[in-house]
Amino acid sequence: MIKKIKGKYTVLSEHTGRSFGSYKTMAEAKKRLRQVEYFKRLKAKKS
Image 1: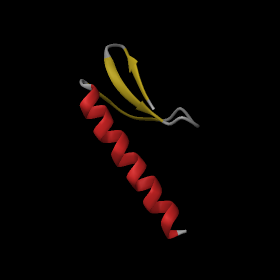
Image 2: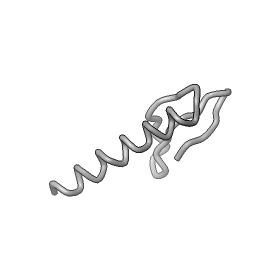
Image 3: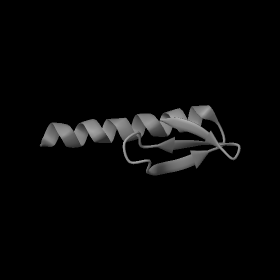
Image 4: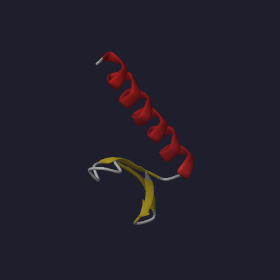
């Protein structure tokens, strides 16, 4: 999920609240969120 915190867009885990980085623009945050989702699916596929 993406939340705006202190003027920056922060990518957070919905379950643990872990941060995956803060970005100046929503586009950068969405790009990072897509990366996180891709690798999450990749890991699940291997198991």
